[in-house]
Length: 397
Image (cartoon, rainbow, N blue to C red; front, side, top):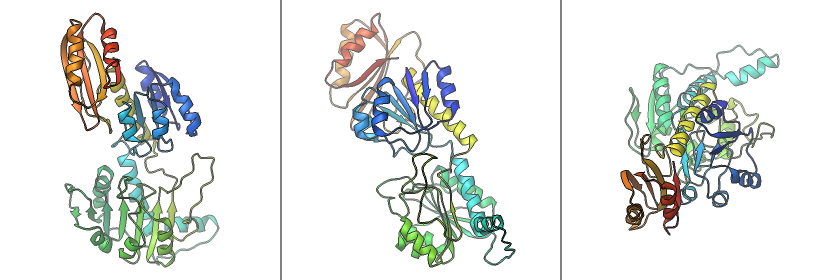
């Protein structure tokens, strides 16, 4: 099978997939939609990061795609529903860059509290501002975490070791780690936190979550850190809060509009403001994280394409299975409607084949079926299943 990796995904991914027998091409950039759609025609799977948008239009033009690997945490750059109904499984790396993002957030809290960005710039300009005015330790301060998932909870653990009092708010009930305390409302968290850090996914509910209203609810002189998604904070409102000095500083790693490549210029209304740290979406950009992501997503793609295991897919029913023995394995994605399993089993029975094992999982749209059979003509069985009206994708692994 041929796999295309985009956006300069770490070379570890290419190496691991090639070791497993795949033919892999690696591009350093994110192609424009027209080029991308044309490129995908000769590949069975594609690996992307956050810049490449796999829209419904692109996916519908490439229904042969078996899998998409998002070499990052987020999957909002992929139309998951369109991928699912086309039989394309989507995988990501929800854990691999957790530590890298968490460390950056802790570093930014210290940097903001000590005005390190401004002091560094002044020193480079030859200005010597040796003063304790406005510089504080973070020990003993309140950290408010919005979104207590993998990254938020890791920030919580690291923050406690710095002596911070940790509070968190999440829309679902989460188990507190260490001495962290859950608060019942976002308003309560904002009102008592000296630092507020955002760790939420990009959803309709989180879009424009932080506006002038929420910023006004924050403590005067507090700090905001956003290393989640660019759509979560209304930048114009944040600029106003910074200029009025209600917010003492901020660190932003993600933006509503980001350059498509390192060659494109970046502009933001936040540029030039006092005690503002701007970073180019590098929360998970460490060598350690990129290697871990490359390994995690490559593993998922390998198991899905060669074994049929959909474990880790974000848009597919989960069938978590290991390698098959002497039996041949048929993998089928079908529309979830009554009678499909009976039809497939009838085809196998009529061929005189013996079913060794059968695994089925469904959701509201599709069924994912893996069948181990003993048959001389497994390709013929597969071709018969393909002819069913319910069939989306059928293949032999």
